[in-house]
Image 1 (tube, rainbow, N blue to C red):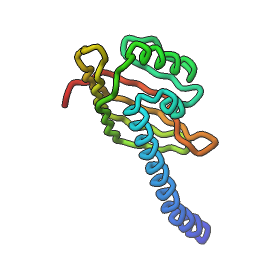
Image 2 (cartoon, rainbow, N blue to C red):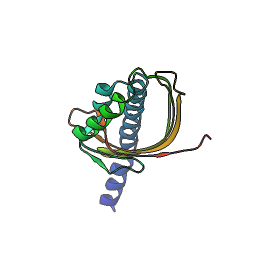
Image 3 (cartoon, rainbow, N blue to C red):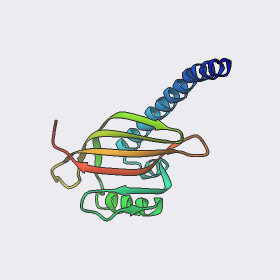
Image 4 (cartoon, rainbow, N blue to C red):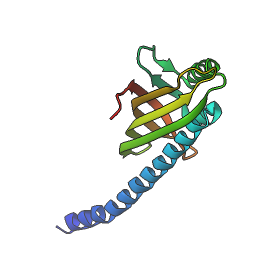
Length: 155
């Protein structure tokens, strides 16, 4: 009986610590999200790529999986090279459902972006849903391990 009581007491005492760790991880992920938004607003591919894991995979509509940080970077550079003179007017990201399990986390997000294009072309006004799988690196930073994005209608 005494063993059971001691084990129960230890489990009870550890629970608040686990909750504190989870809350700290959620706060770190919210910081990650703010960094992601700022990098997107600046259309800063270097800053965006710092948020990706080396073995990251991006899953976009009607596109083969983009596997590895180098391939993701090449894809992004290809896209931005086609947008010379463009500037991001708006990038909004609302993330929900942060779930943390050790060094892995997931969240889903709704995004809206407006990009002014050069040469008088009409602006791009896009919306999407994202599912992110994040992994905490040895340096303690969260990075995108998997990204899945699909187009969305205005809500």
